[in-house]
Amino acid sequence: MVLAGFAMGTGEVTRYLAVHGPGRVTAAVLVAPLLPFLLKTHDNPDGIDRSVFDRATARIAADRPAAMKDFLDRSYNVDLLGGDRVSDQAFGPAGTRHSGPENPPQNGSRNGQAD
Image 1 (tube, helix red, strand yellow):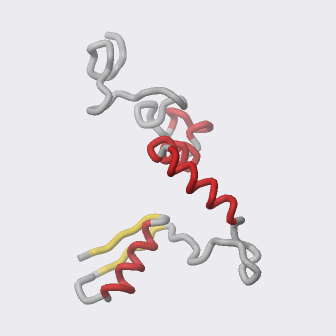
Image 2 (cartoon, rainbow, N blue to C red; image 1 turned 60 degrees about the vertical axis):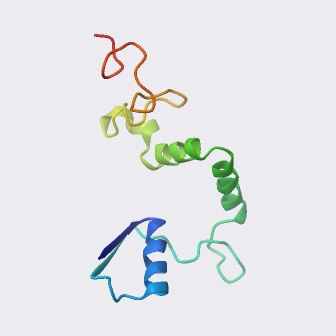
């Protein structure tokens, strides 16, 4: 089995290896791993203030889908790149609804655009 993790997912890969060992794992891939300890403390003065984590946790608890969209919008610089590198279908303007299986177009067209 190959385990691969990106960003925060790299912690899951390393957690799996620590708990279950490498016996069944043929490879582990850590893509853009996070620092092992991010919180600012007396022995980690360059860390991130706890308030940042508290705000993120509260935002996710209040509205998980919106929090994930906000996170991805910031990660992909949608405000700067717009449709140049990220399609409008994937990330349209904030507050818009996108067509997909769970949200079909209202005008009967396949792509949500008038024919």
